[in-house]
Amino acid sequence: MSDQAPTTRALAHPESAEIRLEGVLHALSDPMRLSIVRELAGAGSELSCSEFVLPVTKSTTTHHFRVLRECGVVRQIYRGTAKMNGLRRGDLDALFPGLLDSVLAAATAEEARLGLPAPA
Image 1 (tube, rainbow, N blue to C red):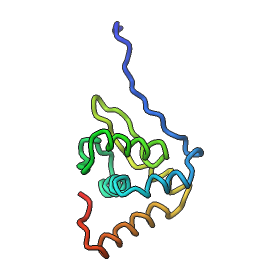
Image 2: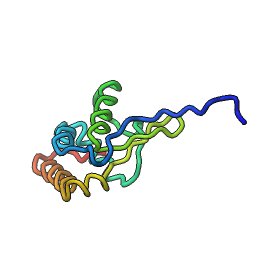
Image 3: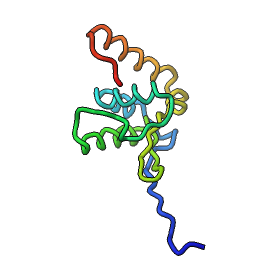
Image 4: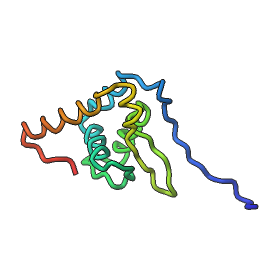
């Protein structure tokens, strides 16, 4: 038996029933947060915070991830020292059918219309 207590750094997430449409729309309304969600959707798996290259400070990046987590758009868990991020697609699709796909498709269409570079 170990003398050390396990160190878990659990992050607060809303339960599925607590996720609200206005919170999700607020989270997705910011260009940086939308780019994070687009990257997660494209990856199809969890990504660590360090895998995102955003043109903002580390503290601002942390803020954007916190907003996404607190609104129920992403789930964050620690694996060792890495904070892993996963899109809560199942919860979002069950609560708001078609919303995430529509927002992602609209973002892609806008990017093409404006001639913007695709997210990494």
